[in-house]
Length: 138
Image (cartoon, rainbow, N blue to C red; front, side):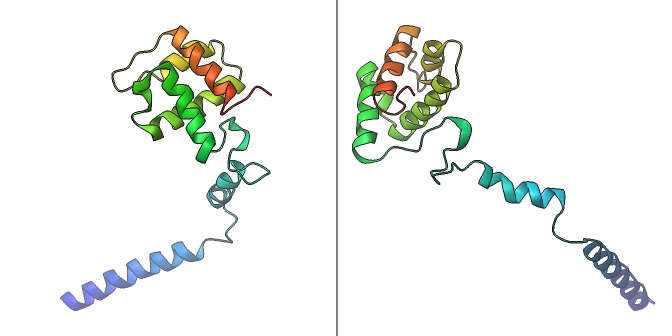
């Protein structure tokens, strides 16, 4: 009796599983479409991955050094974590190019981390350095 019950339960589970799998009428479901196009939508035409977000590609070599130096000139403690400083700089470029209402305040907030608090005047200096290095005004 126990074997018949177990077999019937397994058969029922498999039947539901087969029906669930066979009800997919192609791979053009809305979820698949969103999932497959989302990464492509964020890529720029030049393949840089910057897209329309205003975030520039991550700088390397001399360009990276120049950005870090511009940030260091405002407050030397900001570049202890270089990756965090570069990430903040790239995001600040998006604010600058996106028409932020108060970009100096935005920079001061964005670069106030790890116990460092910047003023809006410091934010102005950060923006000046970023415009000279990572995100020149277009």
